[in-house]
Length: 87
Length: 138
Image 1: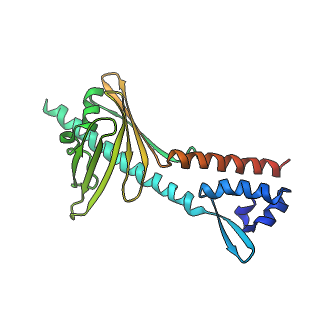
Image 2: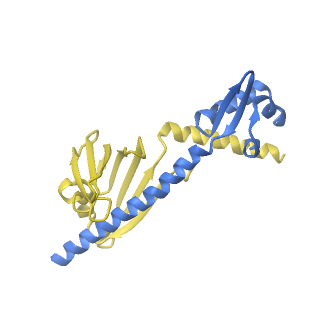
Image 3: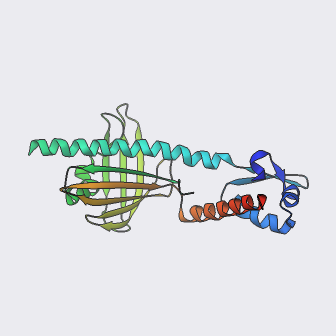
């Protein structure tokens, strides 16, 4: 992905990949919709950049909820341990 | 994006029927489903497909953390699927499997953070990225 190295315009991307502007726009549309790439417009120039925030959001959630569910299962284990002892 | 979910597993010393009940009976849930140490939880639920639940986790300093969702699949004592909404995660899905492990139960919790649409968009996005990467090395 050329965009990982630096922000590029749609024209620059089309040149790099030897694609038509229409082709690049179509592919970019999918990436923008997924939140992986964002676009900004300055005059007639449209710049594309990788949206690391979207990836970071998921990585953060995964870490947070791994701890959350592990802690819940610790509690559940304790609950049954205590119940089994009481029997 | 296969890494868009959390999977945790644990063998619990109880039958699948008992563990399934611990996940679905509000009275038992209040005894273990709380968050912070010495915190507590209030549970309300309608255990039927399409039925809602509310988990109101309360920390020792009185802060409330509300979690809500809807039951999608209920197959006692094997499987439970519900949506999960909190301050941090909206429209996420939790799947719990209860599998017999000798006299005990292996519990697997999968928490998926992408909606179906997001997942499909990510899949297409990543497929395209890989396609582009391939082209670079032709």
